Image (cartoon, rainbow, N blue to C red; front, side, top):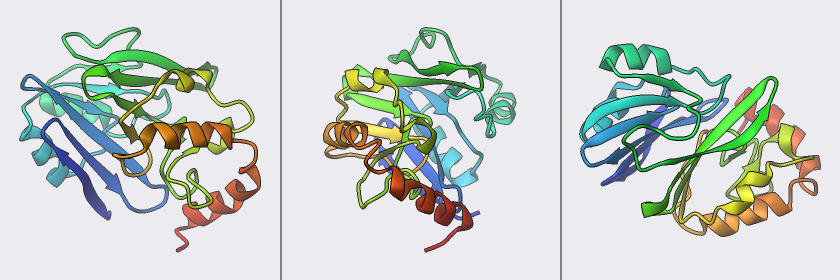
Amino acid sequence: MNVGIDDRLPWAISWTAREPPERSSHALAHEGRVWLIDPFADEVALRAALGLGEIAAVVQLLDRHPRDCEELARRFEVPHLRLPDHLLPNSPFEVHRMVWKPGWRELCLWWEEHRALVVAEAVGASSYTAVGGRPLGVHPFLRVKPPGALRRFSPDILFPGHGAALHSGATQALQDALSRTRRDIPRVLPAMVKGFRGGS
């Protein structure tokens, strides 16, 4: 598996599997405690996460995104928080609903101190969501009716579940992605086919 660490911040580590479908995981640290967000196991990335502090919990933001959450929660002997309701105990994060319907239940995390937004699936920076040369795009299956909850956020940094984090222009990229959901639909299907087949 081709995995790269995209971000090494004093309070965050992000790593991405650069093969179809691209997927990204994050470790967020606060006061010596680290939350693994939608993680898949990669030893280099996990060592980097441990360098930020003690693992506090494994957080799963999407119902169908189990990845390695349960395995890593057992390994680090911490809770596996699957779709936590309103808050993460002793954490700085706010929990918000993105999509909540049968077959798709998704939350996001907002960290006010860093104006950081973590989104599992509703928007992404992968090749099959961020089409037309844009840095961010709405998930293909949500383009007809994108989650209205996304409009409330003005992040300085956005950590997606698919693709590298956006460190600059995140608010503008999010607004552009939401404004172009339907106009970009003709580009999405070819991008999905290409992305999942591993085309260049």
